Length: 192
Image 1: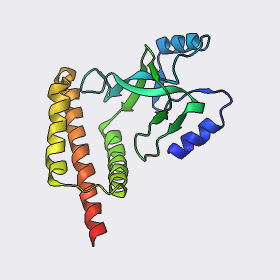
Image 2: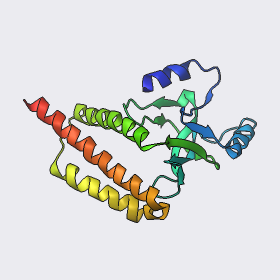
Image 3: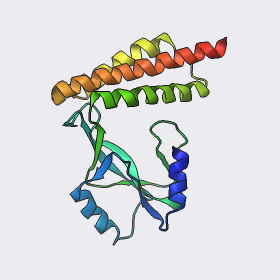
Image 4: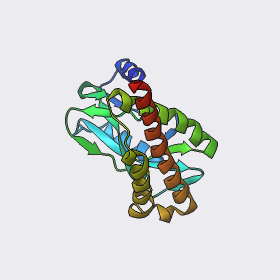
């Protein structure tokens, strides 16, 4: 997907680009902030924005998901897309500023939607790790998932998101467990 984004950016007319995904939406406040941005000289090479996640019908305020800052407004002359299969991001030559207002992210409207993405993303992530020579160990399969649950649900106050926070922490734990067991499977296939 980074190749598609790079191609799209290469076709833009202006130096400054705002990147949003199909499941994202500009808030009214962010639109107003961007209108003002157009009339001033930028102080940075790129700007990140806080992204609010709408998960199973609720805005997630904790769990490490908010504010999840992502770089989305950038000068195309000093940025490039990281070549990753999952969760690509921008490499910026220069400093990154912060936009004040949020970007809405309608991440998972249903559990079925979550698990459809889950299988695709865990496969892509494990493949990427395998290609980098990463070996899945017992600690990756047992300790990483348990620690992630503790971090999201306790340290990052996911319990304050109610049942949604618990579901998100459990699903995220399963994601990490599955990613590393898929990596373990790929490691075994490579060693045969």
